[in-house]
Length: 336
Image (cartoon, rainbow, N blue to C red; front, side, top):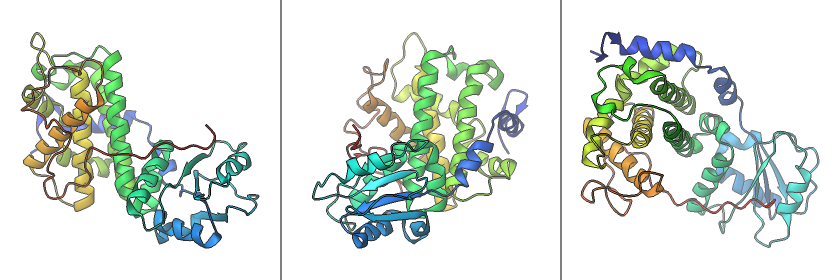
């Protein structure tokens, strides 16, 4: 049975939140297939790189050019990938050819030695999505090889947004002793709306029917918990966050709670199984560890060394999809 916050049924409350969130734009973005331009040393090498980056599903939506070919009639693309190992200036030529496109086309370099360099391909996918955050659900939905990177982008972006919102809002800092959802006020609802949008984007990434909004929420709500993990995170926070006059930093609750919700939903969509309590606890610990690494205002001191792994690494339980700590490649926009 779904738990309740006070007299409010959690499912009904979340459906109410869902009605107040505009999801049409997210759905339209997610259902619009991504398009890429790939410029390589030769046309054949560009095609090899394209197959490695997008898989066979992305070939019809990708335009290929050799570095010495003209760039007319490209059309609208989400990003341009430039592989120019000879440093012939291809990046600058691509930037010039696409400079009047609207919205602006992001240009990223492939820094690997060959398309077989899986680490470089992973970094390239992450870079594409970082520069096109709104298009992450579309990439994950259309291209299965992008799903892990797209889910991570959605979760990281929402977690950061909720943390930033908590810094400028008047959300009560005594969240653990709040007795019901209504007592948290409008600011708490904003954080929850952001989580609902994140769950909808993750549903898009993993190919769910985006017109069945209620069905999506009914499917995922038991997975992430009736209270979207706010209370769970608040209870556990005592083990890894310092107390100040009996309160817990609201930024930490917003960030860790949101990331743990996203990881739980991602796990379910990826495996088809609800994460165990120990796995959810692990997601929370990983999020807390990442929060410490981010060195955000108000969180720079006081973490208990025995509460968080100090070097930013943890042993993932079975089924964990991606490590929290990443080493993204440098941003290499030729236009800067």
